[in-house]
Image (cartoon, rainbow, N blue to C red; front, top):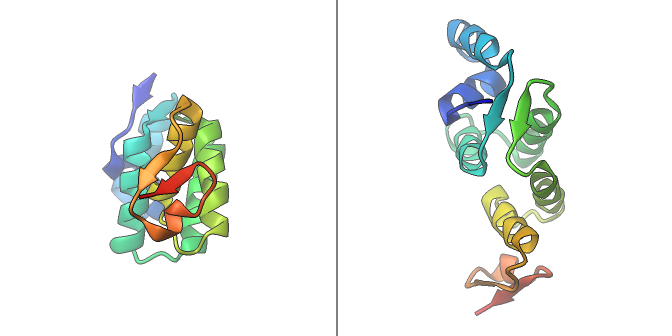
Length: 126
């Protein structure tokens, strides 16, 4: 299966450049894979460049998860991270994903200096 870079995924979500969005659509039509890194970079771009709010970002991630032509690396882990992200307003999506990846890999506790992250089950504030 093919894979997509952050800028392709951003075009699929933002739809801010009609030509590039159409090119991205055509590329993923045969199926495309998204790594955790690309997903995190996309969320960062949506938050910082496009100034999307948490709810809008959560909706975008959910749409990516449900997209018929896209396959995300370990989608169950991403879905769990998204659930935590929706509930915990003080945490970024990347923090939620880091914790859930560690949980999926069986490598808990996750040591952190982050106060909000350190309060979650599976994390240990150092």
